[in-house]
Length: 196
Image 1 (cartoon, rainbow, N blue to C red):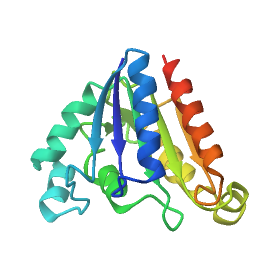
Image 2 (image 1 turned 120 degrees about the vertical axis):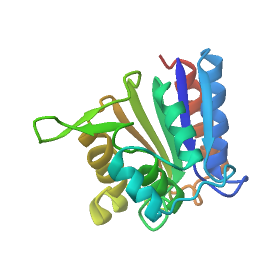
Image 3 (image 1 turned 180 degrees about the horizontal axis):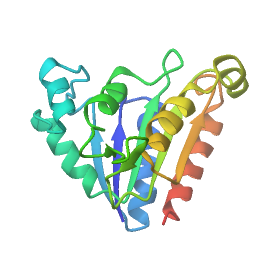
């Protein structure tokens, strides 16, 4: 299986980076091919320019990096996003990826009858979003309203018509014990070593 991972965290010592390594190790152990789009290391520009917006409307991306990402997405059987939750939402680079890379004519199109969207990534069987945050799960759910689930799962991928959508959330990352973090990493590596 060809797996694309979209990763966003600027700090190499972050727990997010540890998750990336564990997930990658698990997937490779299951003989999956992993294509990493490391937005920070790639210097991805999240800002939608005038040229980008024109390209978006015309369904013809013009930025070479966006075109490269689009071509790699077309080959993906499964798509992963790994990022921290900052101020209850995704970082700017992840949001910019959604805005600039998940474009009409490539990732989805408008239904010919004028209502709804249809998915265009024919190989894509599912999307898994893995996040870290320092809020308790109950607080994020009840007080904030699970914004990542609403934005990434429901608003983006479900609206586009993709199925098999999952969100894995690691909460209270800074305050849990090192033993707990190690267990999380062991468990997620094991989980994706059985991924099919």
